[in-house]
Image 1 (cartoon, rainbow, N blue to C red):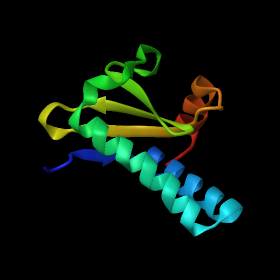
Image 2 (image 1 turned 90 degrees about the horizontal axis):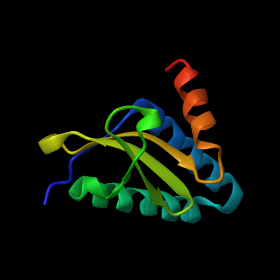
Image 3 (image 1 turned 120 degrees about the vertical axis):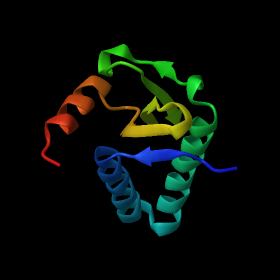
Length: 106
């Protein structure tokens, strides 16, 4: 089965930051384990995009779903799968994190 998802520029940067943080804090093995867990959820979402909760405050069609201690924000793109917009730590103020990342230059 082919999994269809696109990781956007903001999400790529956030995943890199997650990887760097955990590599520095706990080592490469732990960082890989955390990222693998996140991508296992992304694969699940690509197969069943409707399982996430709608978050209209972030835009039309945007949904969120937990991945361990992180929250994945995405939008279903029909037969093209899903677009991943953001991956934030769940303890963060989600609205603030969204606004801060969207205001950064790409």
